[in-house]
Length: 322
Image 1: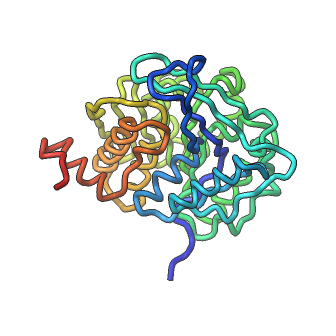
Image 2: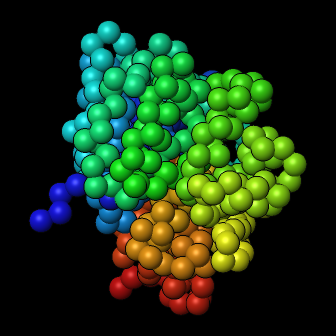
Image 3: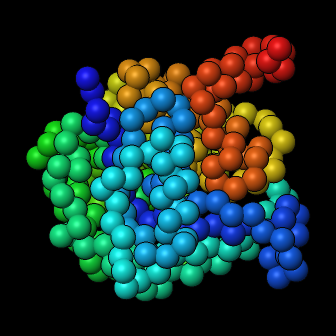
């Protein structure tokens, strides 16, 4: 009986307090609670799509930490290797939600339990049997010790033969462009699978995104690069060729979390041995479903919903499941 994870992620999972739809953060009086965090979002997305997923990270010994772990467990994510810090709080994220207006995101993560992640918190057994380790650039930008923990994860993945998936997820509130280049650029170059925005590749590698993707493929580690374009289309590049995927046109309720949903959709296709074109289409479909619901994770689909929706989006069939 297989009990280990297919995918391991590691990062900061925060308690998200989301303002009522359409109301600016400074005027909001009612909030809904959920969980947010790039790596935990991907873990939840993959778990809903039917994959065995484990999340590594640290939360505080507080009600917010308990809520984060409970929500991830409810989505089927294994949190048995997550740590609880008795001396630091769980991170908090406040934001509003509007499909047209700029979204205000406020992070309260300085000194959080996640920022105190260190190499000694990462055990080799946590990666045993995993096919993919998924990381983002956010974690190493939290602190020097979190940077060291991220490198330990990469080293352990290399020893175990686990593919490293990396999404830069650049957030300039965490550091300057130079700091991102210095801290995250080297990690990007160590990844087997890269999912990055066009602007992120330009920032971290210099030059154009397509040239940067080709440069990564030439380093030896990287086998595939997915470029998320500014117009929301995507391109997958490997030694075998190049594939493009347009974004599906849907009514957007909340655009935050689209990138994490896309990553979960693409990694699911990769894990199941789907070709690049199909994996891209599934990724675009999962992202399209995610942005039609509030919060980072409410719209993440099951595999059955993904497949049914993808047929509807590509073939124009009836979207109502009767």
